[in-house]
Length: 310
Ligand code: F2R
Ligand code: MG
Ligand code: MG
Image (cartoon, rainbow, N blue to C red):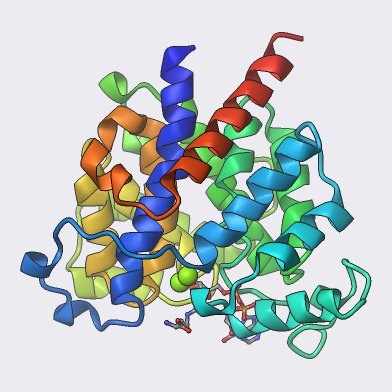
């Protein structure tokens, strides 16, 4: 049980550490990220962690169940415009704040297409943790939570892929880890992923055998704010550096582009895999509001324990 608690804490705090570190480099061109600059830094977390906090608060208050009005209200209450939100998400949250039903504005975003941004994936790790033994429930809840802001199938599928990666990482033993098995299991998720995700999972498998240049990885997997161009590279950065949390984050930031979000997602997977003991304590201690995130992670673990004992 102690090991499991370590993994819950590792994933939530690993995600916030990745977001806070990555935020320094968001939008950078990858060749301008210098290893000598990448040192112990604190800094503010961004929208990624603020929205994950909202997911944690709402699911803990609702005993692990989805409550759409409550979660939307929590996102709106927490919203701090200085944290660098995506324009589509800002618009959705402001419309809900102004009185629209919680499930209306997201469907109308982007001329009715819905958002395929990575905002649903970046906040979803609590669901991967809580439902790591129940894939059906994990997929159902991830989809419901995504729909508050992201109704495009690619935005929702990216969140499902990320939540499943966190769940798989919780279930893996680092002493006996095979990255190829991890990808195979992701490919076998009983959910119809669009070809863009299927092709990128195939590429990751190939790259694990024979890693191409960083330029090619960035070009083929993508490093931007859309879910299909960020969730796959976060998974790859974890799988190609799984034994070392620092290397996972460094690879995610070195790629440039949407560094806070890619480091947040790879940090969530690596933290679930290595546990909080895999993250140097002094890195965690400098995270803004660390006690709040730690308490929420502990509450989530207690909720899981309660459900597992029934
Ligand atoms: N927004 C940012 N970073 C830029 C500004 C940060 C700056 N440093 C600051 O401090 O102000 N980061 C955050 O946004 C990403 C998550 O975005 P989310 O929540 O998915 O928002 P949105 O707007 O729905 O989607 C993001 C963009 O994707 C494109 N897009 C989405 N759906 C589309 C569609 N159907 N058709 C065409 N384009 C679509 C748009 O460009 C959206 O703006 C994270 O990186 C987070 O850190
Ligand atoms: Mg952000
Ligand atoms: Mg970002």
